Length: 449
Image 1 (cartoon, rainbow, N blue to C red):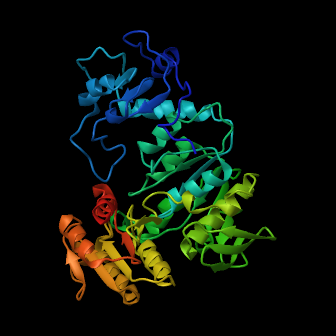
Image 2: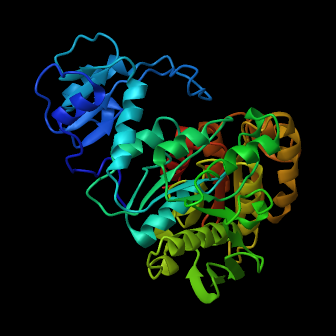
Image 3: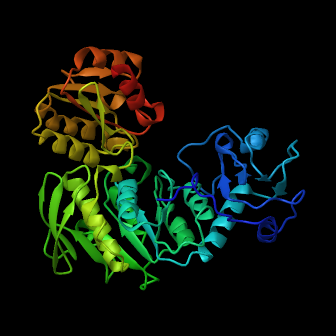
């Protein structure tokens, strides 16, 4: 799998950038091997794009920041950056391109980069599972994919701008949303040959007028005006999908039908062909993701051999990967959570037959709007299968009879350190800001060593 950090190819030349951005650089810019927005990651050959923390109403981000990339140009230079793109005056002698809007410059680079890709291009969205899908896809078929969870108005064009245009693909890009009208422009930017909708859950539903509006937003990953673009979709959404779509699921009407799931293996029917496939991490929720991967790869004419035999290494960090420490197993599912994905993780772990106690450390689920209290309460029905439950955040504050903490900080880690013992299995899952953004699992692992 290729990522921005690993990409050493020459992606852009000074002459090409000047022509594309319609500006002259301050001096002769070196060849560019990477486009970055984080000065801390700058290295020789990088083009540092100075973005403001508030992109304005065009992108309607869920949150803004007072930080401004222009304040970090000297830091990028010290770390080796070769040039920068700016939209305001800065005191630096780093080779620079002055444009009217650095966000528009990023999208301009992305549009040009897309025209240079010769292999099949896919785009995936869904309330959960996007990064897992991408990882499974790339581990099986090779190619280039957006690094980490680069799926918004910055991450998608940045991924395109760093795509190795001399590769033959496949290329796969994640597309996310937390408000209406976000997916379609990103889909148009990626201009995919195939699109995938994994599921529609209640993630970010608090930012939408209704679940129907959220569903329509997710469905906009497919463009009815481009019938030649293949569309892969969860069979549960068949009623709403465009004609000539391809479906995965558990019914005979699916083009990729899951016939059975047992632990980390599944059997399926793919266009009439009976196949057996491994499920990295196990569980029916990952079996659905794996079936979507195989269907998409089949439609693109890719070899499925490697994809049918994926190992646990294909699981991205924070999406259910196992960490062994001091005789215990931590299931790190801390990257994010919504009601459906949390219930799926709890259900799968409850079925685990390995010796030792089952412990769940659960963080509140954000952006649920008016249904937040009800959905947090519903999760409690899965608690009886566990030996101990630790809850974090306001969403779980009203849950009686369970240990509750306002935040995932040192006091929670200390109490876990006292309670857990060898052979315990510990699930950590919650919305991004609860655990992942604070490196909770990393800190917990360090404390248990």
